[in-house]
Length: 119
Image (cartoon, rainbow, N blue to C red; front, side, top):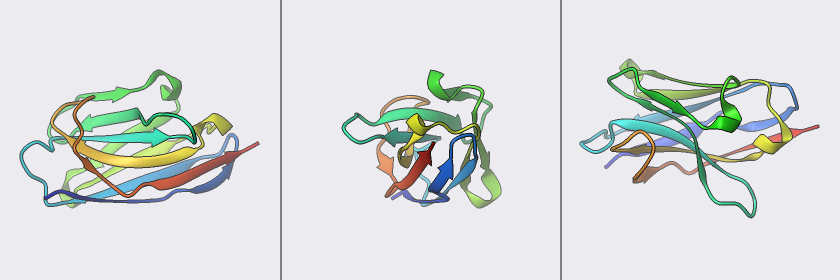
């Protein structure tokens, strides 16, 4: 059973930065990819970025390209999301997830962490 624990959310002024962390334990078959998703009030959960534990593949949603960077440290099973040049529209609950593909079918989820960007 994969367990994911996020940290690093908070409130920041527009233009600022935050770094989210996701500590993973119990990695198993079918959890080779790690992703960050977000869900704003009244909107569907959407993928933000994802990365492969053992390769070089990564994915970024268009709204965050050039501003967000996903990275991993395999030694401590932690995935990060560095968020720069934050905008009010980035405000959402951010979730860490694990799954078998780069973009779809994520089946393990963290509890979520709130990110609020104020202007």
